[in-house]
Structures are given as structure tokens and as C-alpha cells.
Amino acid sequence: YLNGESKPFVPTQADYQKVYDEIARKLADETDYDDGSYGPVLVRLAWHASGTYDKATGTGGSNGATMRFAPESDHGANAGLKIARDFLEPVKAKFPWITYSDLWTLAGAASIQELGGPVIPWRPGREDKDVAACTPDGRLPDAAKDQRHIRDVFSRMGFDDREMVALIGAHALGRAHTDRSGFDGPWDFSPTVFSNEFFRLLVEEKWNNRKWNGPAQFTDKSTSTLMMLPTDIALIKDKNFKSHVERYAKDNDAFFKEFSDVFVKLLELGVPFKSEERYSFKTSE
Ligand code: DDH
Image 1 (cartoon, protein in one colour):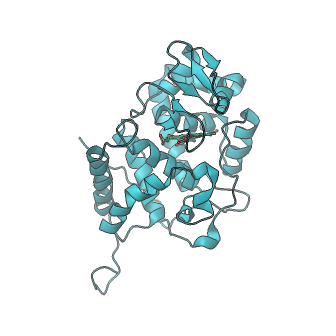
Image 2 (tube, rainbow, N blue to C red):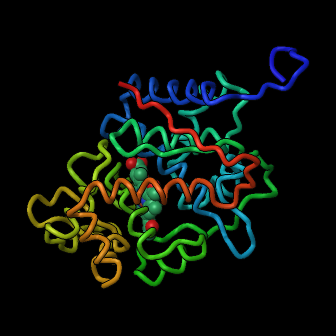
């Protein structure tokens, strides 16, 4: 119910587009973050809200937005995501009818589109849950590990090898921070542009161990300014993963199409939607 109306407010696609437009406007106006955009950290918020899903028990996933609460907000994997949640608070205040769970996932979809990625058809209907629904620590992937760990974590959510590789292509965006994960640096030269550059660099660049005091990570031979995590390098050590990396490195259209499909699936894991309808939002000019 809004503004003392007697009928419940039922938002339409146009209402959700207004939320999208507000996020897009804030992304364009507020450039005081990292490489000039909050988009990457909003994508990570949507992913960490969703990637807790466990298909065996039906727990976790984006429905609930339980990362608002400790202990989940304090899980090591979620370090730094308060910045993304705080960025969205004024949007929630302006559109109080939207749930946090819908807002966070919509912001992830909007960020992919605003940063030049594919359209991410998005479905409304998530409901917020209370602190009791917080997921246990350890459901999100650990960057220090190998391909076995990637398969363990992502098959728990219900993804196959091809989908795992496509999803991790989101590392075209943003960077690692020593005060959050301990790792350091961006994956490519345009961390605010969604592209297949992560895959192209993985196959075309030579990756050496970085000599530094931080956790084991890799750096590019040509410029020593980029980085790969151990789990990123696992994608070219594993034969089946590598076949998809090579395909995406050569074919940006295939990556965009397959990423969109799998990101849609990620954002919907475990959500008991009442409607089938997905909205394709208009990207800003
Ligand atoms: Fe990631 N990611 N991610 N990631 N991720 C980090 C940053 C970002 C792993 C570890 C890290 C996905 C998969 C994995 C984004 C999106 C996605 C950082 C650095 C670590 C560490 C955090 C920091 O210090 O700020 C691991 C491990 C995996 C794995 O699957 C094995 C997926 C699937 C996505 C996705 O969106 C679909 C984005 C975006 C960032 C950049 C955040 C930022 O602030 O910039």
C-alpha cells in the first residue's frame, strides 16, 4: 500500500523501468569510485546475493536479501559490498515498494547493460526474509583454489562447465582490492566496459606469478599491471573449461548471448516466482 491508498500498489514494467533509470542515472552521475563506475561492485552484489543457492536444500539465492544482516554481511567473501548496498539505499527510499532482493538483482542487470553488456531480461517477485534465513559462510567460491573447487561450488547451484566459464567472464569488470579480498588489480584495461577481454587476455597473454607479499596471484608478462586469480587461471588449466574460454575469446557475440542466459538463471535461483514474465529494460543513451 502506498500513500494511504486502499488498494495494494502493483508495479508494472514501466515502474521497474523507472527504478532501472534511477540506477542508470546514479551510475552516470557518481563517478567517484575506482575506475569511474559503481557498476562492477553492483554486479558483484547481485552475484553474491544469488550465489549462495544450494539446490539440494533450496536454501540461499537472491530471494531474501539476507546480506543486509550479520553474520552474512560479515562473511569474508562479502567484504566491500556495503558500498554497493549503501549506493542503492537512496533508490530504495525513492521506490519503497521494491524489495531489496528485487532491487539488488535489478541493479546487477542494469549495471551489465549500462557498462555495454547484453540485455539481461529480469523477472520481479523476490521477497525479503529476516536474519534467520542468512546462509552459512563458505558457499561462495574461494579464489585461492582450483578447478575442482569451482565445479563443487557451481554445481551445487546447478550450473554446468559451460555456464561456469561464461559466468566468470564477469571478471571483465572491476578489480580486486587488498583491503577486501587481499588480491590486487584489474583483469583488463577497461574494467568499466563489459566485454570478452577477460577471455582474450587469458589465452593471449602470458601469466606469471606475481612477486609480492600478498596472496598468490598472476600478472601479465607484457605490462605487469593486470591480474588473474588462481581460480581464473584454473579456467585455462582445465581442458574442458579451456575449450569454452577459447570459444568466448574468439566470439564476443557467443559470450554475450551465453552470459545473458546464465546471469538470468543465476539471479533467479531458488526464487518462487508467481509470474513467468521477464522484462527487458531499455538501456540509457
Ligand atoms: Fe568475482 N571476484 N569471483 N565473480 N567479481 C572479485 C571481484 C569481482 C571470485 C573472486 C573474486 C564471479 C566469480 C568469482 C565479480 C563478478 C563475479 C574479487 C575481488 C575476488 C577475490 C574482490 C575485491 O577484492 O574487491 C571467484 C573465486 C570466483 C569463482 O567463480 C571461482 C562471478 C561468477 C561473477 C559474476 O558477476 C557473475 C565482479 C564484477 C568483481 C569486481 C568487483 C569490484 O568491486 O570491482
